[in-house]
Image (cartoon, rainbow, N blue to C red):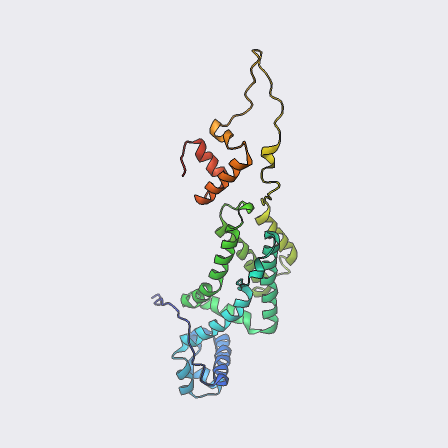
Length: 287
């Protein structure tokens, strides 16, 4: 029988109560959960490990599930430093600099957390291990960390059309997924020596993959401004045709203004310029 799925709500612990007792209970719970796993841990074990009365434990946390959620909240607070991209300073500069900064911040903060809090990775492992039977625990963390990161970075990529990304949201998933895989191999699986990869090399390659098509204002229309070679004349004296695209498509290549207008229409209809040109050539009308 599958366990009944329930949504997880953020716990509101009464701050007027003893913070020392709360810390003792959480430390005792972490010790028991990491030693015995979620299913085998009992509130009696937690009570004994924390050195407080059972009444005290239940007055703060009504059951084992809420106690585990409190530990996940603690983990989310820690991960918040890793995935916290609310600071506007993170997004100052060219996209290459911004993305490299985000990647380095992510890995630097996580490395620091691992060094400062040895239980950090153990708690993540436990959460993953229990996600099959208790998916709401892992979902709680994803909802409060990964989701925020994906939304913020996706919005940033969308605000930079010069990157020419066909799917900014999927690109953000690739960006985060690459970093998470690196962390899994290096820290969670401790298998970095099996498939070694220098961290900065990975970041440089990842950033170049995303920004490789980036254009600048100076280069944006350079292909349009290049003069075409002299056209040949036929025997009758008429110029020979040196193009294959329809007239509609050629007319959009004449001026910078035309390309700028094309950009505006493409963004309004969530299309790339190439897709829009093809639709124009097929006779599709746009406002």
